[in-house]
Amino acid sequence: MLDDTIAAIATPLGQGGLAVIRISGGKAMETGDALFVAASKFSTRLAKAKTHTLHYGHIVRDGKQLDEVIVSVMKAPATFTREDVVEISCHGGIRSTKAVLDAVLDAGARLASPGEFTKRAFIHGRIDLAQAEAVADLIHARTDLALSAANEQLAGKLSQRINTLRDDLMQVLAHVEAHIDFPDEDIEPDTLDGLVQRLENAGRLIRELLSTANEGQLIRRGIRAAIIGRPNVGKSSLLNQLLGRDRAIVSTVAGTTRDTISEEAQIRGIALVFIDTAGLQESDDAIEREGIRRSRESLDQADLILHVIDASEPLTSDDKACLADFDGKPRILVLNKSDLPNRLGQAEIKGSPTVSVSCLNGQGIEPLKESIRNQVWDGEITAEMLEVMINSRHQEALRRASESLRTALEQLRAGTPLDLVAVDLRIGTNAVGEIVGQTTTEDLLDSIFSTFCIGK
Image 1 (tube, rainbow, N blue to C red):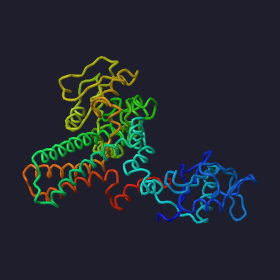
Image 2 (cartoon, rainbow, N blue to C red):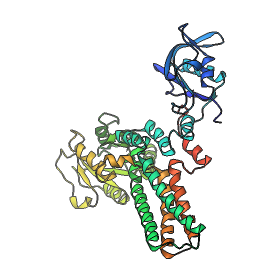
Image 3 (cartoon, one colour):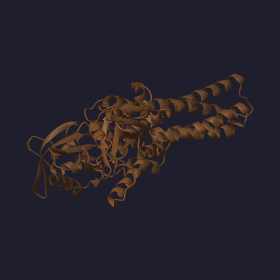
Image 4 (tube, rainbow, N blue to C red):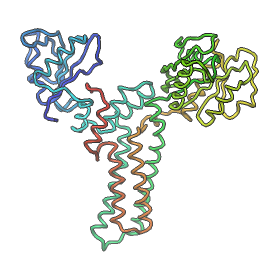
């Protein structure tokens, strides 16, 4: 498939000022020349043009002018894919963009599969697998922190650590295998101590990387925070205050919210999906019961609960039932209506962080945001942490590596035959190599790149 010339729309579909059709492969220039007619009679064919130059003209198919375009010529190896690349910038209408793409496909290119441009960049050695994943993270970044973490990974900060770790393990493995090849040569005590020390250092580095997994996934995907409580305690008003706009209908009539409402916001650099739920209480109304069912379904998927309580009234039986039902989940008790006299018994709400707010005037909303941030992220977010935020695939590979290296270390200390030690060392080294693509399978690559958009 690497012999094919591929093409795809590299910009979002829809109406816009511009759209870009990207062509990559050995026949990219030939494909472009079959369609592009330069506006100037002094212009040369794309195949003979200098690399990294722009050319103005038109896309013509079967004698019909399709669009006025600017064509970028980028020749291998100084391109994203390390192949010849032609990019056609045309007008961004849906029909015009599709017409240009269809012409490119008819001229001999094949429609790219999801992530195929980035996959070719990886296969041709321009980026490693961790950097390829960072491309997708960069595109899908929802917060400034996620963007920074993706840029650090794309720059190779994580890859540098992984490659250093793998090189150290390869040296230990080579040393062990050398002694397997020459069994009459015993490992000197000092040499053995050195190998043990190197494996201990490797294990320590793996544990440091694994410690970033939860934060890395949190930054990439954000968290789901469900707003719960009995009817008319101010759940929808709280959602509006957190979003900074009127999203949910607010009324003094109990039970206004009959369905779940989801909205995304950034809180201290972390993406949160707030879910405003129907009031949790017994009801004879069929529609209200369905809303309550959906609320409980959302609660099962929530990472954090914001339990809203009316602080101007004593706890009701519904309040107490709700407190008991979700006692084991991460939550913050939001004591609303702080602008009114407090009639809440403090002894009844112990055991969870509490924040007093007034959804009427916004008092306490900023401390609530800080409390949310502290619940999902303990400590400061430093630049060094963003450099090595691993994802779930990296986490799984490092866990396998950690287990294999732990076994190899125990075997070395116990004097186990070195051929058995080498087996676990090789498994651990290969697991580490999977992160940057030094050891991988076609199925793994297909799984990773299938999550990309087609034009990337």
